Length: 300
Image (cartoon, rainbow, N blue to C red):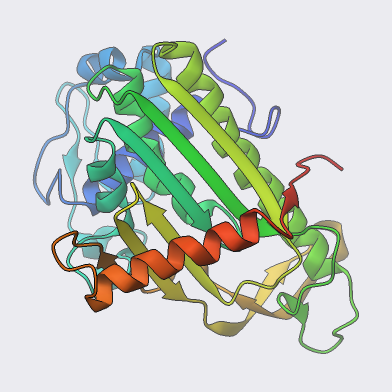
């Protein structure tokens, strides 16, 4: 069945997945203002879905102000200022280095063996970065021999310093909300890997998640053994929904906008600052992974 109801199996329905892929390609500059994206027929072939699914994905992007969708011609990318009334800078990930996480991940999938170790509060940012390359692997546009992911996340059965209610640090609702977010993003990522193994049994693909009883104050991505991306979480106060429990102001971190600094190992200069940072980051990650980290349970 092409159209799934969101949340029925922990993964996004196809039309939202396709909308996220196209939105990411617009953000990364593959399609610029005024460009026409591929026709609906071409998108059907690319994503292997029905015409209504493509139309629903384009409808989401139209409603968000990304695309001008007119009958009889391919959709056209709209200017930034028309996108849901916000500015271009609100959509872009701030970054110090010239390459974003999405670009680093996409480049990693061009190598024969892809390894990604990640330490973060949730897997949301990584999940977004993996959407396009995983789809290209499924479509045999990219052909790595192996893809290995190791994810370190905070333990879901301990009290973390963040998030917490501003007026009542003992209120359990922020932690319940975080547990739901972690499980949702992690299940979606695991679902993507299940799809990869089904479509590409010729690729050795594995994903393992472990938890540590530590509140993350930074995020770290180790890519293909030679690149480290590191960023700090900044604590902010913001209003959030607690479902039927109402709203509340919490102290939280917005990891999706964390600035990432890139370091690359240079075999010719093993004593360089970048090479030492990459080596120490791998040692730090492995020390947690092999000692206090425990398998992460994604179910209540």
